[in-house]
Length: 206
Image (cartoon, rainbow, N blue to C red; front, side):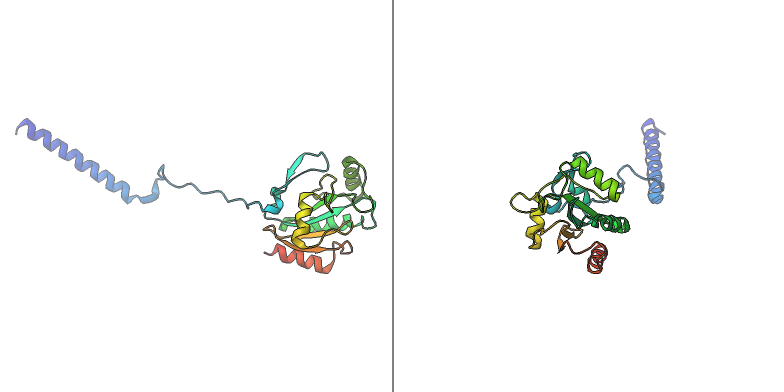
């Protein structure tokens, strides 16, 4: 047998061996993950609705807080005051927030002195009053205007979307998970009002 023929046969055996190895790997299927295997994708965060694409100082330390962090939540937005006949609603608002927060409700408080100047002078005083008197734990923001030409951007949009502006302290706006304003409620509507609670539960179910 010539040297060339020996080399040819050796090469053929090697090629056949490689082919058999490839067949074995193919038969194994997905037993061994490949480098190109798609990794599981992380859940996509809810997009921030235009209504919430705003930043306000936190009441306690005045650090900027983006409202986008509440995207996908049901919101009850309330303008609050410390010296009002409705100030006792803080207790009911905290109870409502605590009861439904695990299902996606967040109460947002915006102190204001627009009505009768019934709010304390400084954010520190307001924060201490809310914590010490009513043990408020839902998010509160720095004192601002909520009505008229100087209304903060959130309340300006809430007024436009609902067709009604706050008429006194503890006016309430219910906002759906997608940023749509569901309804507005007067200061006389208490946090445990049957219709308000029904609307909250309906929004949470969606």
